[in-house]
Length: 187
Figure (spheres, rainbow, N blue to C red):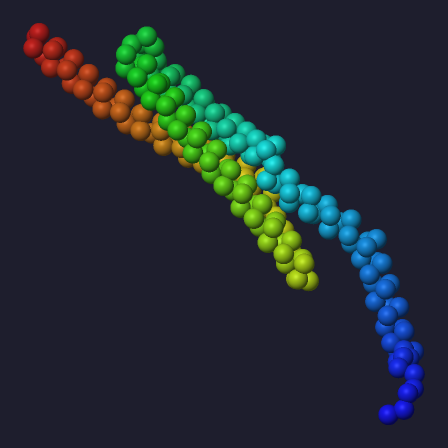
């Protein structure tokens, strides 16, 4: 156990491996790190107040537009069937649709915000995958949120109008039957 030099000399292979590793690290820092940071920033923005306001606005506009079209169509239909726009029946039906619009706006907003939170969580999961050297899934875009909001708004407005039309047909039948009974009694 003599006292010799305790330093272990690197082999040429080890030096070459270290050089390759350093070059890969430098490439990562200059080529990939900026894109990785952009991705991190994008994921972080998904949870911001501005993003939430944006998806809320998309959902709100979809519902408002669909319901306004349906309300106007219903109003024209009732007027064409002789229901006075100043009558209680007319106002009641329009108010029911307005109330349904308000409920649908709240529901659609809630669904859009949940979808936005799901996008954020998906982004966080992708960041974790990235850190483990795994492939990263794409984050769904606002187009998906908007499409879902539009579908929901269209369906909610259609169902509300169908319910209103059904009620109006019953009221019309009752009025028509009463009028018919009155006229037969006069003859």
